[in-house]
Image (cartoon, rainbow, N blue to C red):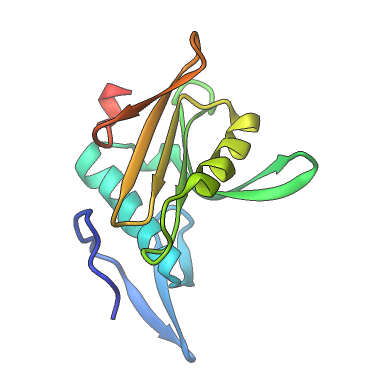
Length: 151
């Protein structure tokens, strides 16, 4: 049994593969292990596409980047349609993991390389979104997940 989240439920395709439960990732086009974090990722991506109008073709899951010489994987990146430049980076945690300063430190380290305009952090129960004002270099926390057309 998987926990209910504060975002709308998604029509996930699940399967058993030996003793491991898997979910179909609509962005990676393959089945992946259904961990608590993956449960949040899949629901959040479906929410962005279905309820907020984010184009599926501009989203990427588990994108590898280099941060300070170390290979890291961003949970989800939203690219712009003009040139594939990252526009937003998203970090997901299991519903059992609180969103803390450490989570923001992690996503900010990714953004030190990506230079996106938006940061999204969610554990499926709580979601925090901030826009980065590049003129003032300050974070502006938003009340809700913006629609794609508002970005």
